[in-house]
Image (cartoon, rainbow, N blue to C red):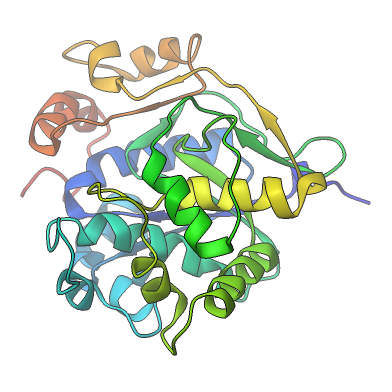
Amino acid sequence: MENLSSRPLDIVSACRAKDLPVLKLAAENLRRFVPFKSLRVFTARSNFGEFEAALGSDVMMIDEDTALNGMTLEQLRRFSEAGFPQGAGWYFQQFLKLSFAFTETESDYFLIWDADTIPLRPLQFFDDQDRMLFTKSTEHHTPYFDTYKNLFGQVAHYEFSFISQHAIVRKSLVREMLQLVEKNIPGNETWPWKIMRSLGGDKPNRFSEYETWGYYVKNFHPGAAVYRELPWSREGNRLLPARPSAADLKKLGDDYAFVAFEAAHKGLRRFLKPLLNRFAIPGVGKR
């Protein structure tokens, strides 16, 4: 039988208009460097025209305000917690990506890929035994694990982080995970609201889809995954020259498997503009 590593994947991202310049470059390299089937992008319906002009008509847009049963971004902005409404979008995009597990396609797997991250070399997401490959990181933010305990009634037992800008996802296991959340947390609300009402600690950021999914698999389905280290960086704006070229990205791939651009978006767009202009991207950089 054909192993999973050779099967093309649906790739799922959530993106604001501000992140479109990086997603454009990411989409080009995703087509080159991962087993690519389709790119699905959650965004506001008002962004569809600009996104389709930049990314191509073959990229599928998903209206973010119809994706989650019982939750829209505007409703989440009214959540009564410190850090809101400013933090609403940060939580909302995580729930959007998880919600793709309820989308019916022919495959039980999809790839979450952050919109601010560009792959730089070929990547695989299954080993030769069809186990999912999770990329390890070194981040440790205690409130994420407080929330995990609240949701599942057990300690995650932190060893490493799963926050690495992407994750391979098995839909059936995500559905199982979220159904367990709905079972464990009292009330009639859907799983996104139950997560919001189970946040641990008192910091602004208290839930991570990557840590929750990674540690759920590690603790509940330990034979389904293996864990790897890849060289990557969050500092793409520091690693690339002021006027980067396609050759600069290629050279960066000698040292890194992927790179993220975690910077103030206004500065980031200015930084990437010379590279975007080389590719003559329509509709980008006008706002």
